[in-house]
Length: 396
Image (tube, rainbow, N blue to C red; front, side, top):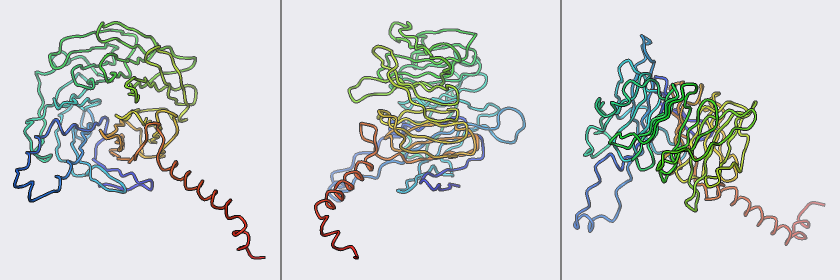
C-alpha cells in the first residue's frame, strides 16, 4: 500500500524492517530492446516508452523466530507526476533464510547484488541477463563468488567503484578489504582491531578510496599505490560518520564527510587536491543516520534517527527539501536515482519512500526561486513605472 504525504512524497509498506536499498542499473540487466524494422519505422514515428526504474530492498526480522522473514524485494517505480512511489506489489521476492541483509552494494554493470549478512557476504546474481522485461527478473545466490568474504563477520560498509572494477568492504572488526572485481585479487588490506569501519567511498575515477572509522581521521587511499595519501583530521568534538565523493562540473572532486559535533549534525567539504577542509555547515539537531550524493553532484541528502529527510544544494548547502518525520523510525538508507531527480529512503518502520527532488541547476539551486525572483522584479518595475496611475485608482 502506498500512502501520499502532504509534501508530494509517497511511502510504500513491505511488512519487514528495511536495512538497505539501492536502485537497479536496468540498462545493464535487461536485454536491450530490439531495433525496429524499416517497416515499423515507416508505420510509427513514436519512440518506445522508457523502462520503469526499479529498486532492491533488503531486511527482515533477523535470526530467531520473530515471524518476520529475511528477504530481498525488487519493486518498480510507479510514475506519478505529482508523487511517484515504489509499487507495493514486488516484482521479485528472494528469501535469505535465517540471515538478514544489513548492507548491500549493487554492481553498476549488472553483475548482481552483494549483501552483507551478520556472518559474511553473499552475491546474488541475475539468473539471466537476457530478460526482456522486469517481470522476468530473478536473483540466485552464487555461493562460489565471494569465498574470501564468506566468514568474515559483519561488514558495516560495502561498495563497488563507479565502473564496477573494484570492490571494498569494511568490517565491524576494523578490517578493510579491497579487491579487483570480479577476479577477487587483493588490492589492499588493513586490520585495525581497535576500531570499526563506519563508511567508505570511491572517487568516480577510481583513484581514491575514503574510509571513516569509529575513531581517528578519515583516511584517503591511493588505489594505484595502495598507500594512504591523506589523513583528514577531526576538529575538537567532531565524530565522523559518512563519507562520499562527488563530481564537480570541471571533472574534479569534492569529498563530503558528515559529522556530529555537540548537538548538531553537519557536513564538511574537503578539497581533493590539497586535502584541506574548505567548508562546513550545520544541518540538523538530529543525529545523522544516512547520507547520499546525487549522481550529477548537485544535491546532498541527509536522513536522521528521528525519521526526517533533508535535501540540500551541494554548492551552497541551501536547503531545498525538508520532510519532517518522513518515516516513523530511523532512516536506514538514502539513494538518488540515476537521473538525480528522485530520492529513495527506507526505515526500520518497514517503509520505502520516494521523494521528488526536481530539477537542480549546476549551482545547486532550484530553478523555481529564480523564476519567482524574476517575476517579482518585473512587478516592482511595473509598479514604479505606473505609480501615479495606480495611486489614482485608490479610493479617496
